[in-house]
Length: 189
Image (cartoon, rainbow, N blue to C red; front, side, top):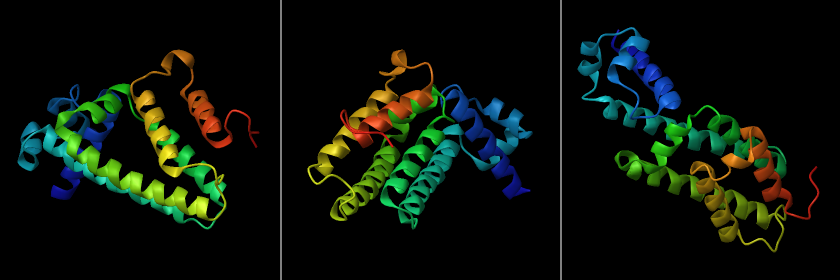
């Protein structure tokens, strides 16, 4: 029962946090969705933030692992780039704007975010550097500049700076992806 109760609480919390954000997710809502009492919740966790932090740590580990698995696939470099972009775009679609905003601005999880961002940056930097060394990326592209550009665009997405331009998040992702991969004068394949 203990393992099942913890799993039910984690699943319910994750579902609610993705939809509503951290602040709007209440312990009572978690318990209702999990079909458990508040007593059971507080038996396992001091508060919702302890549970959310545990979930986020597992989630971030899974994100890094999934990214590494895509990078390690035995498919052409461009296909791996596209797969990473689509995987991230599909994943981001499951998150509410409240969740994304709180994730990047919440002081409560800031150190955790910094840690995962560092791990992710190192992974992507290594991937693109290797791609450039293999001749898969234009030799005139400076990888640190590319990484900075990607971070700026990510921040703008998180801050909602593109929202007024697109009715459909998929179209936004496509436009940003095509600009990154093909540039202003390149040809989309």
